[in-house]
Image (tube, rainbow, N blue to C red; front, side, top):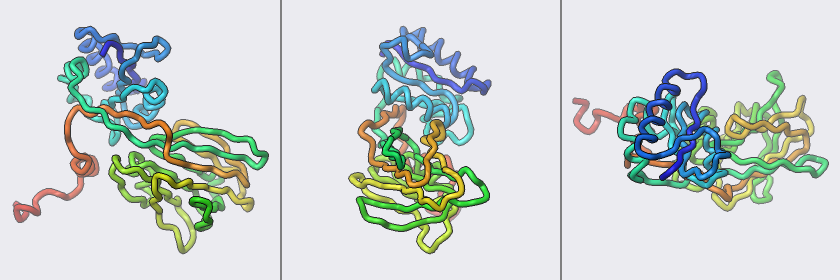
Length: 276
């Protein structure tokens, strides 16, 4: 380990403080810390902030093909590995390679417009096709592996990875999916109809969302809440399991179930010992 790219939240005091402390500790162990990927020779990306900062850093990690470690200096911080207050031994672990790396599934997303032009993007958490006229829904059709499944009048359609299943999809009633699963969650957002339950499709599936013509205004597709593309009527958005995973650094062996309980403060304590 010789060089780390640091991506931090620019407006949080605790993120700035943690960044300075970690950078000093890493440099003391002979590791160069930079904030520009163009420098080259990057071995790891270090995100200091919340989940938004982490998702922004994921773009750099994926492009560079290096692992990503998140330090939470935000609110929920579900994607990050440890809190900003728990970084005392982090520089040593990074320098000595005392960590594990796990791969997280991504989505590859392609939009085909009515004029046959295309746009391409990807997501670690989710791609959301969202209405732009708050007074009216968008009319969508859902197609899986070439089979028309249903139509919806909805505020949007969420296409989520297992990693993103605890984010926007969860708030729309989608299931929590363990992150080592390969699947795509399809979650209609505020849909009107009889068949509006979220669906989970397998890793070989091609999911298509068609924007139907009876739509008041063109919706937008947001990938990880960072990148926006206008999706005109009669356009088709196709999502598949991504060709490139994002590699996440784990510095402890806490299972996902324990992280889930802790982050959501689930009532999981006491029943084994009769509530004592």
